[in-house]
Length: 108
Image (cartoon, rainbow, N blue to C red):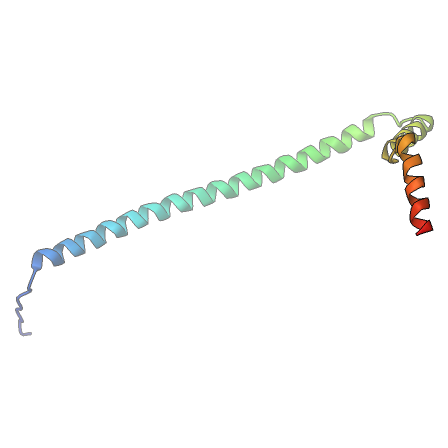
């Protein structure tokens, strides 16, 4: 095999460019490793949250089964209170004003 020799015009620049590229590649590899670690931790945390949530749901069901049922009178009373709270209340003096304005509109 024949040897070929060439002379480069700015060998320092080329060496610097190769070293810069090697440095950037090493930093990218380091960031990739960090990202992979974070993704693994994320997966572990999601799994732990799911397990904890299932356990909490089981405990909630057990709790619901252990408490006595509410009396129907109490439930009916609470239902009436909630309905009363949902109904919009208009002050009496405004009702009168609204009626008067509707009458004026009907005359027009």
